[in-house]
Image 1 (tube, helix red, strand yellow):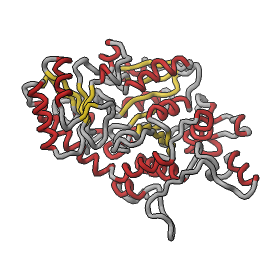
Image 2 (cartoon, rainbow, N blue to C red; image 1 turned 180 degrees about the horizontal axis):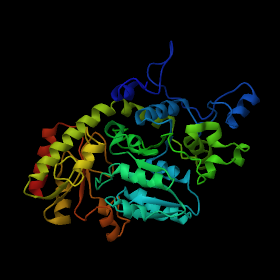
Image 3 (tube, one colour; image 1 turned 30 degrees about the horizontal axis):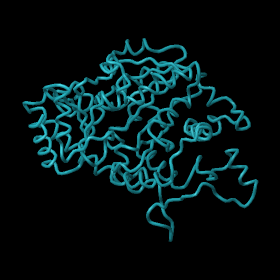
Image 4 (tube, rainbow, N blue to C red; image 1 turned 135 degrees about the vertical axis):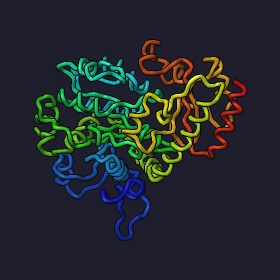
Length: 424
């Protein structure tokens, strides 16, 4: 499928029906798969043959969607997970253990911040957070001898910071570790982190990839470009006793990382996606290219409208020429960023609450990045576990409203915003 363009791959990559087979990717709703001999089954368990034997480790429906996402990102393989949080956790745990250290941008989703700041810390994996706009010297200073990966978001949720991917990749590689990038908001339609030096991609497929708010899921994509054989990743290069001394890099080459994530962590943790959710996700992926164009168009119009409104204190959207991230956005996402905008209303938090409660078309929901316009106050919801200092580091003020602009008619969206502002 590599010869086809991205919007064509959204529709056709991953599933290729043969003669007389279903045109639409089927849901294989089975936990297990039958084989005629014990020897055939044993070869699957020893990773000597490829095939499906238990849905926790692989399923035809999941496999087709994984192949599609890997193709869209340009990776060598992908693995679906039960949520975006699971994808972030497994991406790190695949190469980190007690005693390891992570360097992360501080401008990341609140749940991911808590994963790195608290949960993984309790498991013995420490993390140093750096400002997304840090200098190369400041970034370099965060590394330690036991650093095993760098984590960042292409476009942060909800502060909309655009990460300088090449800067972060250069620092990571100089210290012999991979760069893991969460590409949820930009999607592969608007950014290809692997092209700018990233090594591993994660997604919350719950967001734009699904686009309809009908499934919770995540995905890890292996770029297949990082050289794991530098002495820092024995879990990939040295014999794995749980697989009779198998070495992932020797047996699976460029796909070593994603193979270990599936056969080791998914086997033992079990955060797998369901076949039904994978099917629903695929329906969203088929229209991803079309929807992202509309999301970005509508968001640009809303951002420009808010920027010129007397009741708005500030607007943050990378597509605005006045944005501090405008130039980085043009470099990494020349065709558009996403449909999410953050802004503050004059009058502070109380005015923000009145505005949100007065919206009629847009809904106040926890979700973000689907086809319906919605709003949220992150400081009191998704990021409420953070201290005031941590909120500032993440670029989240107490008056920040996150608006996820949908694909409704732009005139209706703007009229709804205006009537709500008049009541704020």
